[in-house]
Amino acid sequence: MWQIAIRKRNGDPLYHGNRAGFRVIPNSIRYWRADPFLYEKDGVTYLFAELFDRFEDKGVLAVAKLSAGGRVGRFKVCMDMPFHLSYPCLFEKDGSLYMIPEGRQSGEIVIYRCISFPLKWEKVEVLYPTTGVDTTPVPKELCGNSSSYITTINTEKDHNNNLYLLNKSSEKPVLLKYNDTCSRCGGYFIKDNDKWLRVVQDDTDYYGCRLVFYDVKSITSDGIDEDEYLSVLPPQKECEKNEICISLVKEKDESKYVGIHTYNCSTQFEVVDLVRHNSRTWKVWAANIWKSLRKK
Image (cartoon, rainbow, N blue to C red):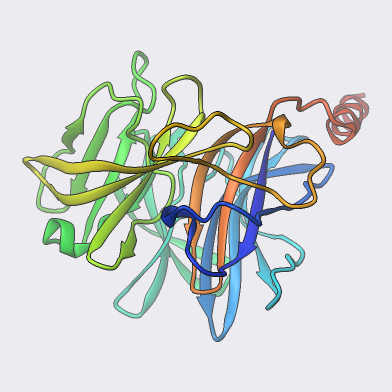
């Protein structure tokens, strides 16, 4: 069971080693939440996220307003499909707002355009007919193309370990990394002074065992040139060189969180998601009872 944690930006960001002050947002009985993305519009910050529906056993996408102090408003569903959805990655282009969510069960990587912010979206393009996961736009400065994306493509034998470059100038995806458990994107690219950082999920030990920030030099059809910059672990893990452990406020037992796999930031906030070691909370039991009653 995943949960989102948030903090106001105060001093250095997480990728500079400032690890303290994240506050976990409680899940509801029906939904747990993951894959947080932030978007600022007209002075207001919006939090987009995956809400996993315990009743339907699939994810939907939802959005909530954040107050100036970081209080999260009520989540409203903005995209619900017959298949699982996650990773609501937003980007702007030519004055419009787009989303390229993860919907691998559909067998397509699809781009949606916002037609009434923030709740109404329309399908505008199939980027590629494949089971791509966590597709993320690549900054033009890194690839020389304003319509390039990277994604991990699943097969029956390989899960999230093969990283590909997609753009309209290529007839098929270009392989960047093969069988690398530290490939899958975990958020937007981040401009950090003269660097571009790529947020990556590390699935080496288990799914979402840590986050890695890579310093990216270039992404082209010849490959990806990047070096590990910093690793972020769940609370209370043993850290080595170039590693930090995230720290939470108002949590009596930080050790129950054992995974982390998404990071995003805006001018005002930073967000991550964390997975709990013991998911058998009263909310899970309540959801299971409700599902059994509905079947009757």
